[in-house]
Length: 173
Image (tube, rainbow, N blue to C red; front, side, top):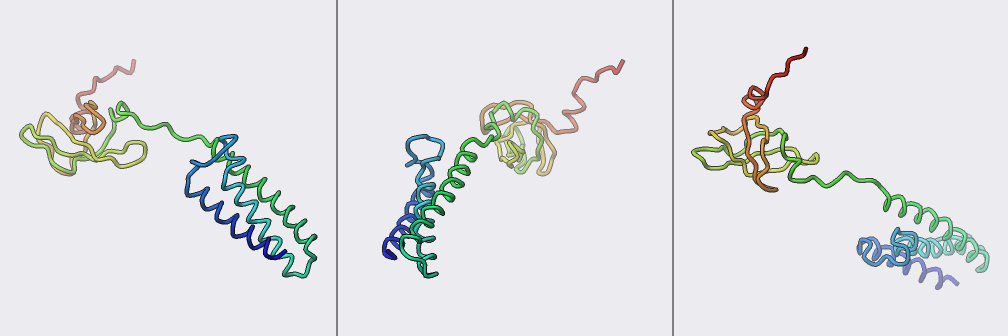
């Protein structure tokens, strides 16, 4: 009986690892992870480990197997619940090129004589380096605002102070 427990413990661990590193490519039946390889691997491995533990504690083979099945069902249930909650987890939308307009940042490679430089801006919470075009030379460290997204990697920028000064003033009345 111990051979069965060893085979299921090691085999389940292998299935679990294959399922994790295949990153869902081998999920089947439901698409949400309830019967995914990581869930099945966790349940099978827990059966083997629980059976081995009970055998080592002196339990008869049938009792060790019964406890192994119970542990496998509990672990499988919680692994499936975890997999479903991860599959349904809300994520932030993917940043779009249009999200660049209005982004603030700084020049990291100066613009000069009509040649573009580089700007570092925050996009989706991540620092993003972009090709920066400007009407005039902007030195390294200059605070900028993106006023036009020309592509996903090229923008037209203005110095932040100049941008805010050019904004129309609204009358608070």
